Image (cartoon, rainbow, N blue to C red; front, side, top):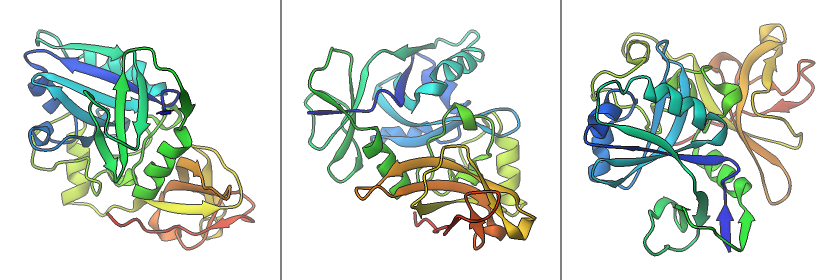
Length: 266
């Protein structure tokens, strides 16, 4: 039985003679790492250093790359990247495929090992006997501290606010890319005042929901980034918040539903 995650995850193909050079100048992580490992976490920023999209990225073959990102961002990401192609020999298009997880290796596929016995794959052929596994995918994201933003959070965070520098999905030695100046300045000269944490709650919430603290006059101090349900129907998730308020954190403006911000080990 295939564990289908296509309702949340879409794939973008970037290929062509100049694809490696092109991507290296656009994304936060060093794509040369794909010469020695099966996948990397990566992100695309706007000129202000805010995350437009982040993704799991792999090299299918020489001069051909695949980027797995949230389905709500795939069209915007395609359009934005194409704006910078200009005369480069690069082709960018959405791959119409079934994106799925498997617990065993699949013949003639990517088999990106996200975790022990959990592989990310895709198929362009019609697939039968599928089950929805979006919650399983989100459980992986939450448990491993991997932000995977959707349209509602586009252009909201710098990479450090999502722990992308800790994951790591940011390489500070690779050279220039869009938005790099802000990210580098924060890394070398500033203190990161906002980080991402895990949480657990009996109360349901939604991605993008604001978090509040009485220490900040019940004003917003963060947002919900990712969510999943546990086997016993508890809500678990990732939140990006101002560090100063992590010990007095609530899901509601009235500050009645408290949650504990749990630090993530990478």
